[in-house]
Image (cartoon, rainbow over all chains, first blue to last red; front, side, top):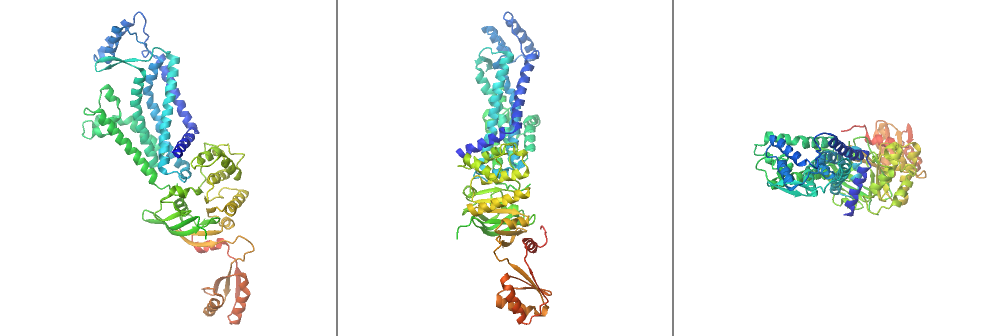
Length: 307
Length: 308
């Protein structure tokens, strides 16, 4: 086990010795900063509620919301606020941190780049020949690299959290405790910011892990980093667009894209009507395991021939 | 007899329907420098890759200190240090960090050992520089350093003198000899530089089209009597008589070709053979002694450089 730990440590050493890794983390921070500036300066994103007139403001909001969609859950929330005399806090550091869950697509992008390169690069550099002639089995090296990819994702996530909160503080100030109102089964309930973060980030991270694993598989199987990164990013962004064309076919619910977006179960806007959460989770796990096993088998069995 | 450091047993590699390596059988002893010689495409690199488990063995086995690389990979490979083809290392890290990373893959390598190896290959001054700024010669040294980290009993070096200047080549050569003689390491080097191999190796295996066609013992010390090759010029009518005489009295088998007979002898035998031939009334028109260099032997056994 200590052997495996050393292998993971090696992968981390190699990863963070590369300038590209630091540039990627830098980009993540810049994107968060840009997002914060955008929200601060753009009109309409941040509503300021006046102490005297906020109830009136909310009512006006409700009227305009009802024009588009009378069933909008925000109407219920606004009414609840008016009834219970809960003034909205507007944008706070907590709220900004929560909004950051959309930033996980940037995170996914970076993780895919790392996953797509981590095996393919060893082949490109020729160092695979030095790596695979040590008393560590290929299986161990494969999973050490995979662990390293997940560790990178976790590190980037922590960076995202820290800087989201930091910029949130700077631009919007710390207000309230971050708890929030949400409509659940037609009732307005108060939930803490951590519950929301865990839920929404968690669902985004499922996507991240699946596509990173896909990139890792291609990287291990085809030893071509550009191909691994390209196909993974393409499928991640373009995959869901095929659903409108296939949703009425019998096989549609077995397609990964139909199941991968788990937020469809929290919002209730399902892509295919007869999908259930359990079915989606099982399908995702099956795909995930296939990716991992295919990558592993090809990495462990294939010859390392010359260029 | 001690246990061989490495044994190749009926080693074969087949890719598709093509047999790349056609059954190699030989042993490499501890403390021996074994040279692998052959034209491009002869299967040198494929064989070396099979020795270290980078390529799977189609048939046969490689045993390292008695352990099979196929079934006992971890135990077998821990005795091996190698550079396969070019010394490719992580360019974005310093030489030291490269060694540190490789040292973590094998338990029991201390920081002192890393320093020791760095000193051994003479990279002390540049070890903290990034490898991408290294010259090819420095990379070669670092490559050797990483191969030696874990005190292997078998060292496999593919083209070890590639890219080194003459003094660097001499240094590496002396270093390889020292490792073999003092630390009893079995060294396997591959090269196409014949003169280089002759200076470095104890034995040279010549590979052609995936077959080991000859193993030559190299005499490195001057005192040893060099094997001579003698060519005598005499009419074809006397060939049979001369061949019989050489066979019966000296145990030498001579090859006949047109007007010439060719056979190997030692220097001490020359006067008695001339006398014997004269006594037997064989008409001699010429007697030429030539010491064949490895290059001649190589070209002789390889024939034309044809890649099948």
